[in-house]
Image (cartoon, rainbow, N blue to C red):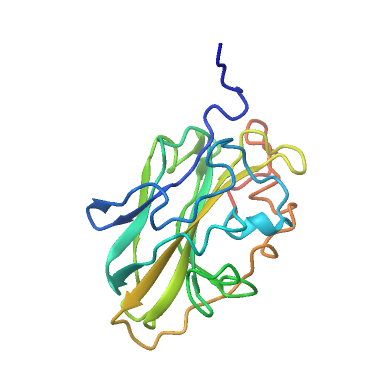
Length: 217
């Protein structure tokens, strides 16, 4: 009898790039992640897997050509179940999007986020919960070139202890045409952006302090 591990039964993968109304095939333009079968999360924010949750699938992944100003994003394999925070980053790919070294160093800038809401009377609300597709608009001023697009869901249901937050990550490969002369930032690195003690990563969502004022991304 095949049984799902309850710890990962509702875990997330993001196999599909979305461009406008088009949903591409699984892992055609998204690097196949190490958890595409196991569905397990990254829990060590210092791990090299924090970049794209893969180590050798860049060269086998296609790169999608899309104009600046277009709407793109990711479709998860199912609607997100775990409460948490979700964001999307981009990075200029050097030398190309399908090279494994692309995305190394402080090159990532945030382009979208779904931030939990909170009120003292009502507690938390989760904008990414029960949602399957997450999209944003590529800034028209973004310089043309090849980029990685990285989605990250930080699931917080077990985040009350260090290392308890579960991160589900994937990277798509795109080539932006048109664009402008913008200078995106601030820039961060993955790994490197987090140490695990951030208030948005180490958090007991079921018992916040009386002085709590809201989620900090």
